[in-house]
Amino acid sequence: MHELLRLDTRHVWHPYGPMPATVPPLLVEEASGVRLRLADGTELIDGMSSWWAVVHGHRHPVLDAALREQAGRMSHVMFGGLTHEPAIRLATNLVDLTPDGLEHVFLCDSGSVSVEVALKMCLQYWRSLGRTKKTRMLTWRGGYHGDTFHPMSVCDPEGGMHALWRGVLPEQVFVPEPPPGFDAPVDQSYVDVLVRAVEEHADELAAVVVEPVVQGAGGMRFHNPDYLRVLREVTERHDVLLVFDEIATGFGRTGAFFAAEHAGVTPDVFCVGKALTGGYLTMAATLCTPRVADGISRGEVPVLAHGPTFMGNPLAAAVANASIGLLADGSWRDEVRRIERALTEGLAPAAEVPGVLDVRVLGAIGVVQLDRPVDMAVATETLTSRGVWLRPFRDLVYTMPPYVTSDADLALVTEAMVATARVLTA
Image (cartoon, rainbow, N blue to C red):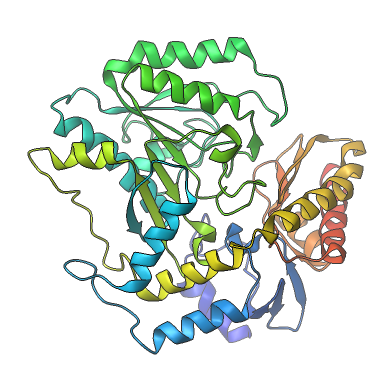
């Protein structure tokens, strides 16, 4: 164990950290259900669904079987000029499950790449129609859309992780973040801001890009779905495309299969990832309407010039189909409602802790927001000493547990979160 950690420190560059790391990572030896077993024998509840992806838990027998069965036939073939059943079925499943009107599916490597593809689709659509001045994106602050280059430009320019690249990234149009609260009344003054911004910039806007209902890594904020309806109406009226980034919110996390369902609208382009394969393999997808695909096809360059090596990977596609199959009977809705109740009840004491600004829950997402930045070393020690793995960030201690997490384990997670809030604000 010590030798592995020594080699890790010497060679492995972990996400969002320096090289070498200043805080050593925990060495995981095995994962099963909702438990991570560390090399020293410690077991931790995976309250993060391993970055929001492992919705069915680790080592699910159905997903294990799908992986083994597909590996027995083929693990990978190039997707240029070839196709295969797992990818065809996956694309069909996604068309059936996503909002009506999204008919075409581009399979990607990761969520960030799916946003990259979405933005490229929007830009190329307008270039194909000869409207070359439509090159900018509009979004609201507090968003996060990935770490590849163009998606960084639509992340929050001040509070996000990519402020370093100001002056290098394309300069997009930003409006204030949506007023907080899923059930909060619509703020007409904010609606006016959204509408006015699209109207004023319509001639230069390729698309509006937002995370529907939940702004994830930008701050775990929830907003009224009616703002999505406003965006759909004003973008249609002013000939601007609309992109929904459902990488974090898709496959049941907010209580609807996709967060767009809360608003009952269909965007022009739609991104999914994270939970797509149940956390087994990296895969994402960008869906679009026939309008977008046909527009690109009419251009001087009639192809979308994007082709990841592992696009449509059969192993990932087969597991994604199996993961979607596990959600097909709809029982996940009861599980997410159960988790929502448990998080609401379990996190309620945090609201009484001095230094806690807000406690909020939506679906299988629970958030405790502090009045100060999280001390990661202290938070990690407090959580792991209580048998829980979470990854707080900025001023947030939050959980997005697997849907199979028991009530007893949810109680342990929420107790650890409240205890951590108390320690961090003492």
